[in-house]
Length: 272
Image (tube, rainbow, N blue to C red; front, side):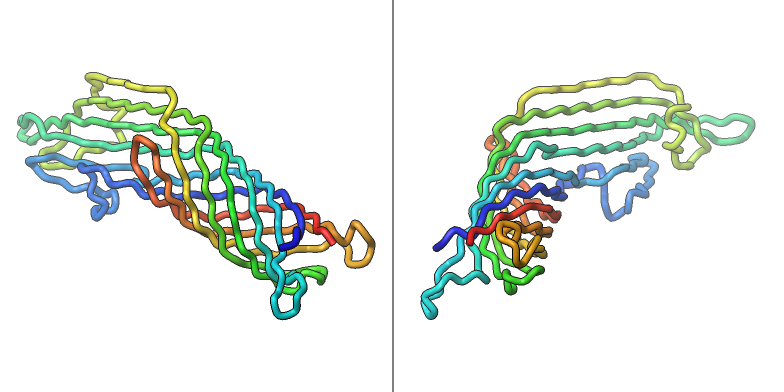
């Protein structure tokens, strides 16, 4: 192999994590809830997943393989090894859930009413981390000698957190409201009901180390700044898109599969 060049790029990638749903929340209800005189009414706002963007700074060294048939370097193929840093949120999830239980029933002016005990549960989960990792990818290119060229390929990433902090907060408000008999409670007016208690528990501290393994497919376009002048014809600007799948594993916690996609912009210097 022969060194093809060195490059640096900055990218932003959106990761999507699917969590298991809450036991009291049925996604088949499409967030509309279900009413039962025996069990009351429940509704959940937000989603059962987590979506967050991570920014990555990557430095790569590329190599062109030799072609056995011609005995020359194949400039349409490139194997690269990279090192990257990311300082971003790993988790950023907010949920809000309402539950109610049917209480006493009474009559006033021949109209039947019932009391509903409503509970609003709010949850905030944040985890921020500094991540270091290595990557390897194999690219297939169109003619790289032209002013514009295209590329695609396949790659792998391995990374781990070097520092990680977590913040969680769980707030629960309880209120009593009076409604017409057999009517669903109006959760949008929760703050106007008679509040009878609030609990607020939060935690801030370090979290366990996390390992990341990813497979991805890069694709993009490369632009050579100049075709003829020396030095300038070795400088390139490229735009790269990436789609992939990440396995996120906490050392003492859970494991998630995170599909992701994003793009980056970078500068590359080719060696003649």
